[in-house]
Image (cartoon, helix red, strand yellow):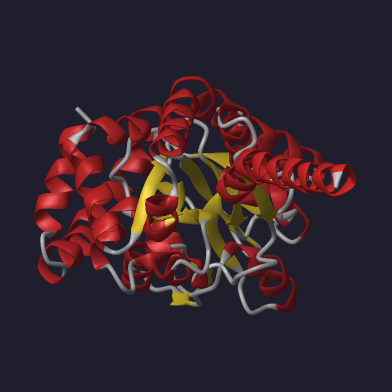
Length: 340
């Protein structure tokens, strides 16, 4: 009898221990979130670094309840497919050039509009200005939430001649990087071929392209100095600034707990205040160093050349955007106001 009583007590004790273990371990395991982060850029590129620094901080802030898995170099989704993947919840986060979604949301072309941003630091002020709030609202309406603004300067590289002003573009086979740049360069006489920056090395090497525009970071990380002979470097002036932001699917965002969302937002604020600009402002110097070493002929855009491009942009890309995109003139006005 005593033996049966002892056995029953042991069973009850075992069940109690199991219940305690489930209560302690089960919910903690259930709350762990693994975030898939995709982008088109090479591992080690500053945009890849931005995603990883962000993820490491969030993981630390959430005591490991949110972890990140990274897929650089378009290893999970093709560059432009990332937008729909986020919108549908198939992808959690991306470092995404916003203009890539302008085929679905034409207003996002404002984030890659010729001569509409003065410099990286000024572009980063968008997050606290009406123009940035307008863009973020458009994104959220379409299922993607913005986290970190990241502006990149860019230049013009060529295999055939130095591109200084619009007249130099005539007759080139050009990758213009953005719908409004494509429109403007087509008006200047270029033959346009669209492709992600990750595909431009092969296109230049095989003659599909002979001239192209992209960011300072991409000019270096894709080793385009190996296939270019001339480059117009954005040291003092640039007509090309592109928002390549860290974004999250709204479906993923809505699954996070309030404390986890708070960790994401706090990290985004820290990135804006401490990481983005210091790490981006040096990119043009790395570009100059790499292209000087490779023997590429370097030109620095002058103020007069910039003003020539600005006048041409206003009568081509800006005019087209204002006339053909709903709310286009309002966005242009807000972008110009943000420059003051």
